[in-house]
Length: 439
Ligand SMILES: Cc1cc2nc3c(=O)[nH]c(=O)nc-3n(C[C@H](O)[C@H](O)[C@H](O)COP(=O)(O)OP(=O)(O)OC[C@H]3O[C@@H](n4cnc5c(N)ncnc54)[C@H](O)[C@@H]3O)c2cc1C
Image 1 (tube, rainbow, N blue to C red):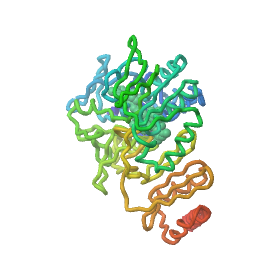
Image 2: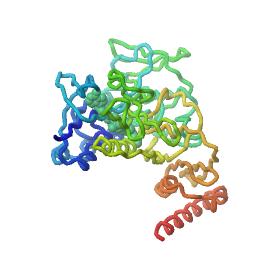
Image 3: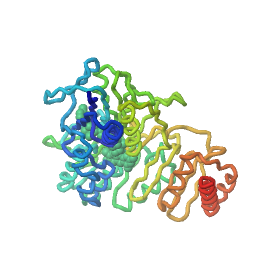
Image 4: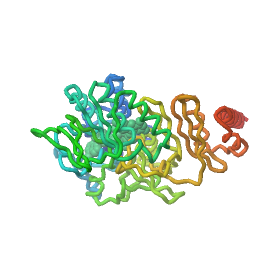
């Protein structure tokens, strides 16, 4: 009898898993249940939709026919309960589905601070396409907006609102932007660009409450009693993996849904992957949590293979993100955390990795050429992480050198001798790696 696979969540982890299952099991019945009415789309692309740099159609990289041609059934609906013992789940409309193998690829949702007035109309978060459409509608009428939070999403919200002519105030609780991941100079580069784009930055501001008029936000008040008038408040203080289905079904959870390195959860025949999964690294004994597009795809692929009967163990690649932060193209790779505590985020941001917080016995080398910035994090023999801002010529080579753990000892001294020498040394490393690979 054909095996029945059910995947909850139509994001990159769920979609990649479905395609992998189909590759490995030609006859299995695959059903994806997704809470959003639309098919698979790029969530990182929502930032470009918000600024108007990209039309909505371009978010959809796969035509709707992809599901049909791979014989993947798509159901629009919300899964409300899972019964692990009877291998059944129930949707909000009462439909009951049976599964042999189940994947929870339910992602994470934006967290809201527990302050008075947070549920007023005009307070927004950015999780999905529906949120983006909603924000765009509000931005057409809004005159003044406040943005609170950190990481990539806070900046995307601020830039998106400013692009629509809304007077935008970015209220930072801390004293600099994304201080847990960026160093002070990197934060400054981003803040300068935001200011150039007309965004007003206020540091050391902590919200106390949201004030409303006729049910709509009209201002925010701060812990020091200051008032900032606004008709829109955008909140990006972090994300929380969706745990409620797993917890109600009695599965083990922590910050995310606990899995082993094959993405199997504590419940029989149930797997989890993507933003929702907190997996155990058998090598370090530590649990990892990521909120990265490329990681969700890779985890979905590994989970898909294992749902279909495989036993592949996930090996975390050096997490990377290539994105625009305040208009500056930025690549973040590997272990780059500064060890700082970021007052603007209460949990992990989007486009973020728990690996970026790991503290290493490492040296940072900074090498700037005009507007282009490079930070390398070095151990004795490896490049452990890198931040590349502006010119991206070194982004791919560095991804390779970090991921492949290329020994740098023979050029290490040269990396401390200024920008020109850093570039020559990295080129020499790449050349040697390529020629060794070809030999
Ligand atoms: C605005 C924004 C910008 C981002 N920028 C970047 C970036 O620059 N770089 C980067 O690497 N990453 C970025 N990310 C993060 C990246 O998109 C996520 O890491 C990735 O989408 C996670 O994939 P996932 O499949 O685990 O979950 P998601 O993509 O969140 O998909 C989960 C799906 O499950 C559905 N679902 C949840 N519960 C249920 C239920 N009970 N029943 C049915 N369906 C359910 C949800 O509706 C959703 O469609 C960004 C995300 C956002 C929102």
